[in-house]
Length: 318
Image 1 (cartoon, rainbow, N blue to C red):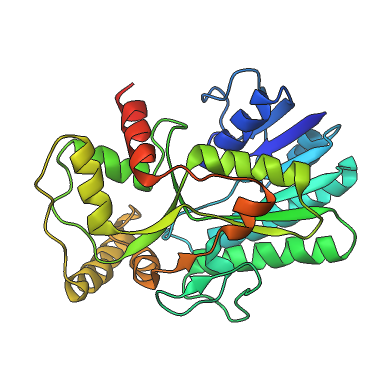
Image 2: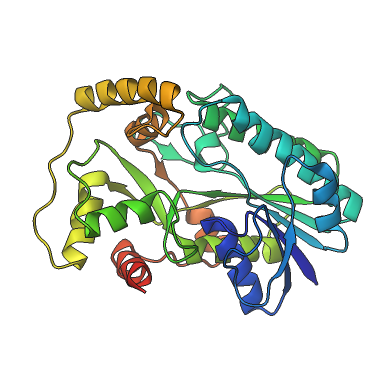
């Protein structure tokens, strides 16, 4: 069996490819830029979500398609890029999977598509019917809806909804890995308010592959270990490094002002803001995902945060 993995040079796609290779599955890794590290034994194929022909070529002969590629950023100079890549790219990937006769389409969605009040519980049965507050979130909602429509039309598709992912993977992974590196190097002067649900990268890879092996068509699985407050996360990382002093927390009002100011500067420079409004929006949502379905149906034991931090720090030191 051959599996195509899109986004294989990113943290999620890399973890999926690694989980497949541990099982001896032939993996075709779709990459935009050749030469980046991939799990051992992967076949590299060059392509782009905005190039439908390259996707058809990549999917040819693949029984499984894992679509993990996309833009996870909360800010881009042109917000329309989110739709080009996350929505239209998914549309093109679905067409390529159909043309290839793929037996199953495994889609990396996000917890952002679910409905919950602030600090409320997220469950697979509660898709948010209303447009979300950021361009990234709305693009993921639209992409998720495309896959759901394809599944309703006869495509065998399953959905994975990871929380914020951290852990070993490609060097230079953004998000929590980058925060941990900056904490290690003393580059975090203050902690933003709020927090986020987290999940270890290896668990995300395993979750995707087990869903491909065991799930019914149309199934959805939240992948999450726990919710963690930003200050508690920073404290745990610094404790693992043998340090006690945690940087001060930024007040919410100051963080909002900083996000507005830094995005205004970014519109002029084209460089990412110090704090994006979308990022702050997510950190203030503070949902508590219920991953009991993945634990039961996929037999997943999520890596505890303390163990995950230790393994990630060791990876960052290597």
